[in-house]
Image 1 (cartoon, rainbow, N blue to C red):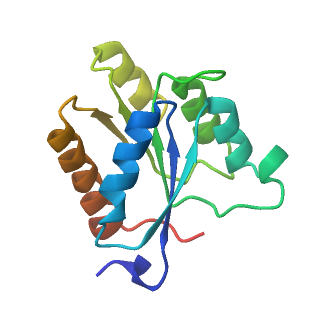
Image 2 (cartoon, rainbow, N blue to C red):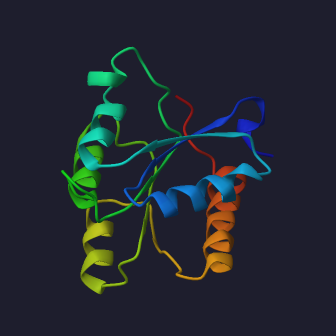
Amino acid sequence: MNTYTSRAIEVLLVEDNPGDVRLMQEALKDSKVCNNLHVVYDGEEAMSFLRCQDKYSSGVPEPDLIMLDLNLPKKDGREVLEDIKNDPALKHIPVVVITTSSAEEDILKSYNLHANCYVTKPVNLDQFIRVVHAIEDFWFTIVKLPRP
């Protein structure tokens, strides 16, 4: 049994596409595990959220899991991933790269930057929801995540 049953799982979604944000919200709404989805729309905002800076300075929960798109405005996902994994205060947070890119170069670079998982977004709605549910099942119920 997962250790998170006593509290909600905090998920940070870093995604600039409003359609994909809505799909993720819908897919996680029916989750078997209680979760709080926080959404930021660019790489700079992601780092502000994670470091509790700027508009997040009053404090936000540390995510248990980060779902990161690679193609972001202001600071791309590769830079965000590198910043997270090079920061001693953040590097323990699992990062799932979920992106439209299936380029071998992006996959290799993401894993070299210590992504915990790389998933290509399906274009079909049903497949997208299936993928999100698979991510949810794996990361929320099977994997043991570090407690903040």
